[in-house]
Amino acid sequence: MVSNAHILARFFALERMPEGFIPRYNIAPTQHSVVIYHDGALGRQAAMWRWGLIPRWAKDISIGQRMINARAETLDQRPAFRQAYRYRRCVIPASGFFEWHGPKGQKTPFYFRLNTDQPFGMAGLWEEWLSPEGGLRTFTIITTEANAVVRSIHHRMPVVFHTQDEIDQWLDHRRSDPNDLQRLLAPRPIPGLEGYEVSTRVNSAANDDPQCIEPVEDGRRIKNQIHPT
Image (tube, rainbow, N blue to C red; front, side):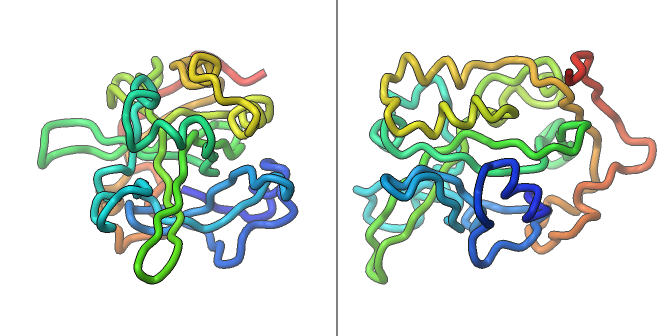
């Protein structure tokens, strides 16, 4: 979920959010979302790109639906991600993320956020695919093993950068050593991260409003024992 444009721009050291940005509460794969990346001499930029990475060698767009996430542990081994991992890294701004818990067909959605209301970045990779209509830029979100807060709900979670230093290091185009980059992707505690049960309205991409992130009455809550300093 991404919301306030001014807060996001200030946190991510941007002059402004990209054209077409609107607050979102339930972004689905194949939809467009804000992506922050390094663009050579222009430096840090933000754009609206499609969620679901399409490798340069792909023959059609449908492969992007299977590339919405990339496992941190195997980025340098997968042909679809190897080059992007070294040279085309990005950050996806967010105020929270969803995970689901329970058996298939009965999964309960949970929303995870920082209890300070501060935005954060999720680690990602991007590619440009040449479609018949022209260039299409797409991205994937990198996941890692869940930390102690998320683990009771799901065994994986997005790689979350909650400090400026982490974001700067990930976007640094001079970094290309996989061993160096893997240190940024390792699972770790995130001060202030908390989760709570939300409505199954989020299961439909047609629902995209503040109700998607409101806690349900008497729903389960997951508290973090590590507090922000």
